Image (tube, rainbow, N blue to C red; front, side):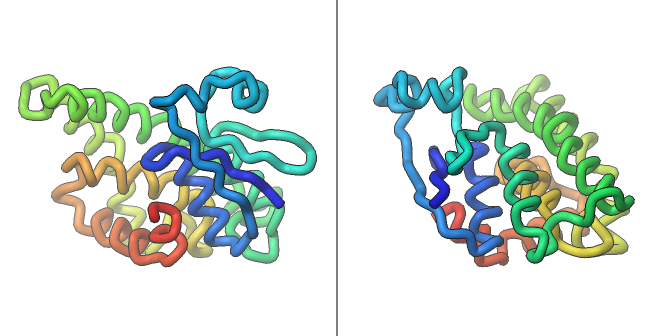
Length: 198
């Protein structure tokens, strides 16, 4: 059985969400960074930076949330959470997954720093929020014509990108975007997402 090393309210939610979507049996190993559990020699052997998530498989550990999510989707092609290799839809799945990790999440990380510092209501905080809105704005037109990021339906790209959108919305950055807000609600209504944050 796979093991997912996990800390709540972190990027580790992404692979847990996908595991739930797949119906895959797994052991959830909760770690507490405040007590040093992510910096033990044992965990550093899984991820030398001492981060989560880490997915431990029979072949060995895999880290980085998007990499884990894509790998899990590949392991279960029958679930159709990733399009067939070589197709244009597969390329779009990669596109939106990497967009989530580069453009969208990098903007959200800047905003989160202001949220932690309680400086959201400052010129710099407003600028960071505007940066998130700018990064996510192009999604509005896509979601006006289809319910998920791929025309073929819900996919691993929605798990990775959706987790960033949900985080951005929690910081008040998803406004004046009705289609993006509707997308957010569709994602949060999924039982697998609800299980991943329990």
